[in-house]
Length: 171
Image (tube, rainbow, N blue to C red; front, top):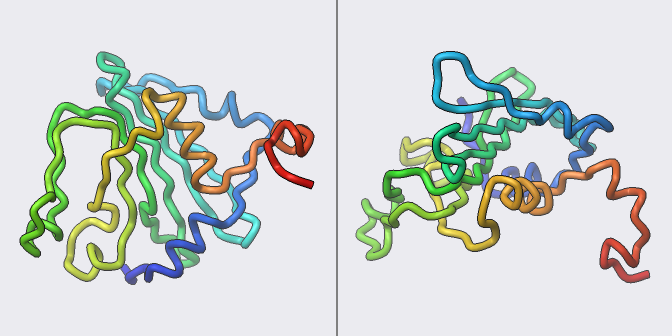
């Protein structure tokens, strides 16, 4: 697999990603047979021609344990996790590169957190999205999904029907 460089990662995240008209139905979670979680995924074509896949997972027993993942599919068919919005899963998280570099704050207890693809993690041989930061931008699955859409430039069909005033934009 090739290494995604920081400018490419930023461009992928900022590329407008229109959701289909029926996006709510296509994101309705379904039980994953033999597992303790519900899951669903949907493919989205970005306006820049890139293909993305959004994967939603939520633990049925602990609804605060979830992941909302943005995958980028390269032209050769390889997939890369570029961002992942996680809930409070039961284990602590260690940012391995930061620990290896002797940085003092590299581990955190269970908390809502966002994983981001970084060039440095790929170059060090760690998972592309191994770096994570605690966030207070969401507090449950639904608010995380809304933040995910906003942060990663997803366009909901219903958003285009709101007036500029309702969207908080200036004329």
